[in-house]
Image 1 (tube, one colour):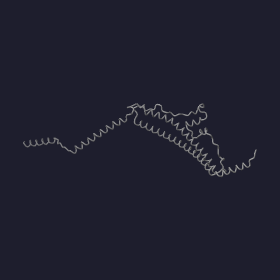
Image 2: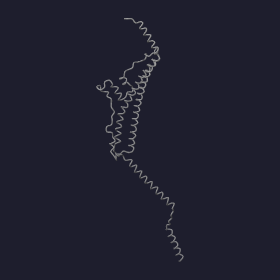
Image 3: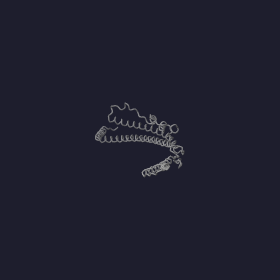
Image 4: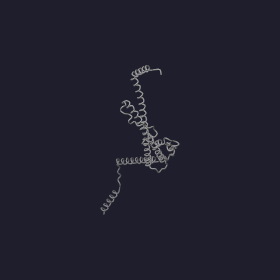
Length: 264
C-alpha cells in the first residue's frame, strides 16, 4: 500500500512539473525584435508623410486662390487686311488676301509689281562679255528680289492665318487651365501641359519662318548695295585707267572742231 502511494505521488509531481512554464531570456533575439519594430515604425511614418504630401500636391491651385486672375482680359487679336471692299482697297485686293492666307504661286505679288520685259534674244553674243555679265547680274538681282518677296508674302499669310487659329486654341486652353473644378485628374493637367508645349513649338516655328524671311530680305538688300558699290567703283577705275586716252581724244576733238568751225 505504501509503495502504491509513493508511485502515485511521483506521477502527480511529474504532471505538475510538465504543466509549469520555464522563462528563457535571449538578449540577441530581443535586440533584433526591437530593431525590426523601430524600422517598421520609421517606414510607417515616412509613408504617412508621403501620403500627406501627395495629397497636398494633388490639390489644385483653385483651392487656395481664384484662377481667373491669371487670364489675360484683353489679349491682342490678329488683324486681317481688308481685301474684299473696293472702297477701302481698289488695286491691291489680291495681295492683301495673300497677306491674310498666303500665296505660294506668287500671282498676287506679280499683279502689284512692275513686270520685267522678256530679255530672251536681247542679250546676244555680239555684246562684250563684261557688258553681258553686268546685265545678267542686274537681272539676277531682280529675280532674287521677286523670289524673296513671294516667299515672304506666302509665309506672312500662313503665319497670320495660323495665328488666328492658334489664338482660338490658346483661348480654349486658357479656359481649361483656369477651370476651378476639382474633378480634374492629374492626367488632365498633364494633357494641358502637353497642349501648351505644342502651341509653344508651333509659335517658335512661326518665329523661325519670319526670321528666315527677314534674313532673305537682308541678303537681297546686301546684294543690291554691293552691286551698286561695285558699279560705282568700276566707273571710277575705268576713269582712272582711261583718263589719259580720254583727255587726248577730247583735246584732239576740240582742235578739229575749232579748225572746222565756220560762221553760220
